[in-house]
Image (tube, rainbow, N blue to C red):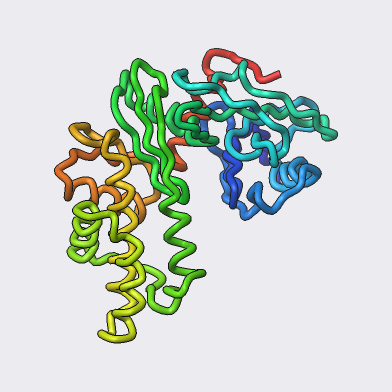
Length: 309
């Protein structure tokens, strides 16, 4: 006979992105279960969100109480579950009282969604990254400087006195996916790998003369046919051309600065190599998933008895 007492959660932290949803089931401030699912905003209609939470969390929910669920990311987009209006920079990352409530049918939980940030000039937006920034500020008290968040849409963020002062987004990751998987280059680019020497050389080519970017990119196709350029070398060169183009455009953020890179290992390593090749000092010690959780924990702030209801 199993007399083990069932452990229910105290609250749930969720990072609901465009292509996937990550969540952490919390008992006090300790994770008792976590998962990454493919149920991203892009594939959902509004009726799906609550059902997904019920399916994923059913065994952790105490039927006698209303469990708080705190969500950041694209669930708060206009096309998401419920729109959480953007805060305008300069500002601090969102706090709990700024989250919007979502009416749910299931009485076992209550949901709040955090807002993203917006910038009017030049126009820019972020959702989810602001919570990661909160996680950085929680781990690195009084951090002032520049954060680079590599990904599908890479963000460069300037932080001062605990506030996001300005930011700029580059579609570098998405451009790489489109060019390597959907364009005429799709048969010329390897699925993985990075030759550091070729990568850095390609960055230098584009930083020196970014006007020839489009010609350099087509040259990968031509060289694969005429000169038997290998698919692995072509991948390193395409990565270098795209990140080099981004570094040209983001120079105002990284020149003369120490840059904190936050992201998954492979892509953040590429940015670290690229920045170091330009003489930039880099800090990279926190994965994006860890930062999201740390940010959500800080915002929920269980230790101070804050309540989401």
